[in-house]
Length: 631
Image 1 (cartoon, rainbow, N blue to C red):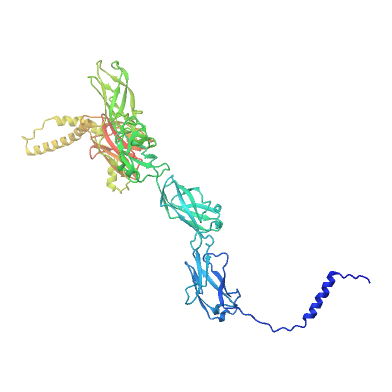
Image 2 (tube, rainbow, N blue to C red; image 1 turned 180 degrees about the vertical axis):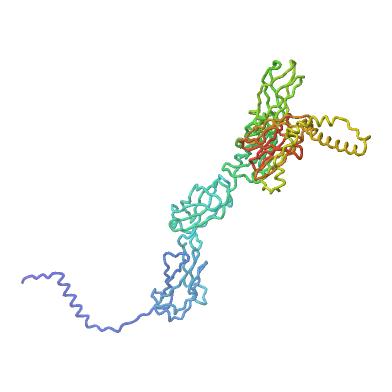
């Protein structure tokens, strides 16, 4: 017989078929549906991330003890109470079985605060929760900044502000939400802050920025995220002045020796802030100058400062350029004013320098220096002073005796003089006194003048001057007739009547020549009119031949024909010079001389070019001087 081998796989296939044929003869029952058992617990599904202000949907699924989902849980008729801790709220707060669909129900939990809350679900009537879960509510995205700052800071000192990142519900934002590189710090208000450090790193939603203010004032710190646009600002921060650093001294550009002038001294810190409270802690200020004399007063106490400034009235007697220096008492802080000019005061005395010897009748030089009462040379004497009289102690005559103020240059006049006696003598100088009366010329409207007045304005010539040739020839016979004695008392009435008539005729003939003779004796013959000018002063000098006896003169203001005149009336006087002088001057245009027949005098009119001047009239020997000063 042949051996036949069968492959193993083929054998197994035959066996399987045989088994199936054997089983196909067994009978089975219908399908059995197995329902979930009684409710045992809830399965809770919570989102991985929950943000403040956003609703959190929690899913509940009902299961039996074998973890079978109870799809028909709505038919169980059970009610559950839903509660949540913290400031969160749950909706709905009561969960009925009917709320479950396919064994699943949802609960919406909302909370504006970033916190951890506990969700509890329990059956009504039971105090034991069926299920509890903890839900973490995270802050929402960055919305704004909270900036905490000090109320005040000292100029030049650093100060810190705390920057806290917040969401829309004022919860601190997680650090992952902030990039410090996008944070910008600025200031707004009455001053500015320098940023020393920016809030680069945030921990627990907060960071620190360092700033500094230099100028006093109040301002807020502003924080801005350039990416999200989130902003925040601090309350106002008041910057206070720092400690005293220096003084500032404000003085006038010019003053007069011996007169008070006002100086303001201000206390400042290193950043030029006025130290308003200097009076409360300052030591006072020593006041000095860079000049040769001493300032009075020399100290200002702290109580004299108001709002960081003291106003002090000072006096200085030396005419020179100086600066005012203020120094903190017993300390080194100080300040200095710009240069100011101290001018000499009014002329007060003179010094006269002469040679040791001279020859009688020959010229020799002398030097006159003008000083004020503080011994300052009056360099502007030509403008501020009057003419100077020269006096001698000897018996001779010094010529000239008067030195015009215009001769002084820089307060010094150098001139040649002559003395006629061979003796030892000394020369002294004194200033001519001014007439105190001053009249101010203001702009006036010309008033209409009546025809009679106009006729009176025309210069009239006294009869003593304009006499005809016939009158001159009659003078001698009339005088002879007047000299004969008259004896009418023994004559008859007819003869007496004729004698009286003849006497009256003779008297009338004699009357005019006698007046003429007296007028001649009193004439002021005007020889020359000249003018001397300075910067703001001019002198009109009228040279005349003086008669014996006093001269009465009076000055006043007169406006005629749209012109302003200084009118000087002289009595007695007769003009024997030309009637009009014209000048190229900044003060005077013309000088008009008119005879005043009615007053037996003379009128001198000086036309002024300025609408407002002051003037003086003085008689100096054989000259009448009208001094005119512009304001």
